[in-house]
Image (cartoon, rainbow, N blue to C red; front, top):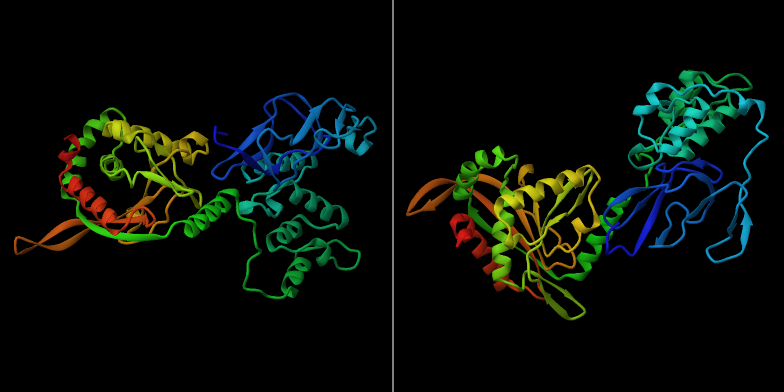
Length: 425
């Protein structure tokens, strides 16, 4: 998933050994430190062996499983001895031969893995009655199997089964004698559970784990200082209002972030130390400004970047960034879109934030925090006037960018924003 990918994590298998699959069927989800994508089958056949289990991180090109014909020989491990794969099951019981009851239509709208939906359909299970333990309450195949086990061992009314799933009660714990478990039995079992103020812990998804890993690494890598500089946004607001109708006519939406990207690109080329990266006592200057913009996806952030912003027009930057935002939020972002950045902008202005300290996106040397535009009383020519002011917060790696360099960067950026025609010079 990108030229720089070296390893990935198998997040979840949607199939089990012995399952039949066709070309295009989703087999498992794989994640890098930035993105998660489903991996589809390239062949028709049977899942003969799963090598890399869910949660396991493996190198690119490593074998994670085998697809083939029933009975075909597969290695115990890559390069190891072979073993017999599962044979096709020709001795299904009458019960399995019987046509499975169709699963309720509600299953199509429930958040569940394809494997969980497939098993639920085969067994005629209403997924709304199954408690999901995956990220965000997503139902995994193990949840359906547990539900089936509970159903097989304990007879319960449909209302009792749904209540047990909602309340986190095992039907076996609510079983009274040898009779059928009813709603009141589930409620009694739930009332008898020790009270706790904690909700059941859930394993965080790969994006949140990646963010946690990268932010911790950045925190321990860069001795950082955040500098704040106010800027009068009057000229930028006027510029955007004048450009907006013409750009929208061509299908491009222009935002303050796009103007900031263009202005930052100019200052980054003027001050190459800020447009660099530092590793193993080596400072690398970059020829062009590849500027990333933090984009919210779910409960996390991904930073796609526009390459060579210093060479592109404002309309080109706005167009490319708009497409990257759509790709990010739809889950179609490519690894190349989020690699190679030299500088990042993080905007919390829409949330009313007026000051914050963003964390550097390694291996970059600085990140710009963009705050809300606030109507503020300001003294100009010995008079108090109301101006649209915005704070720019630059977090810089002090190993390379000291206070003077950071201050000059913000000073120059503010100068360009207060006179945007300088971007044409």
